Length: 121
Figure (cartoon, rainbow, N blue to C red):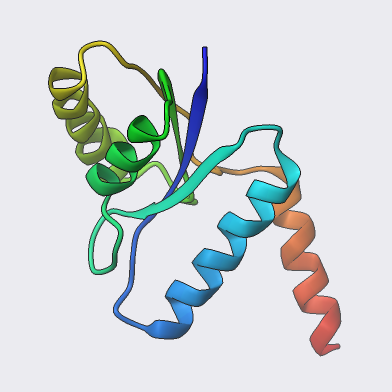
């Protein structure tokens, strides 16, 4: 079964934010063993989740794994994204969808913050 990965960010009107997001998606693409890896934005930027899903399904994905690039389990994680996934499941009934966890309180996040503290001290 061919699996496609979508890294889902919030989205921003700021070009710099979109550039950093694209760099993160590129880094993920380099580190995973999946040929279909795309980014998507919840709002304020393109491509949308719907557009990225359509793209990887057109490229042959039979399973879509959506991994949110969100730190906290807010309303987007709890309600908005699950609702979008339900709509996608109805539209693409032959495709399996999985929704990954948000980043959360991970030691790796704390390590990055410590690095940033050390950079300014």
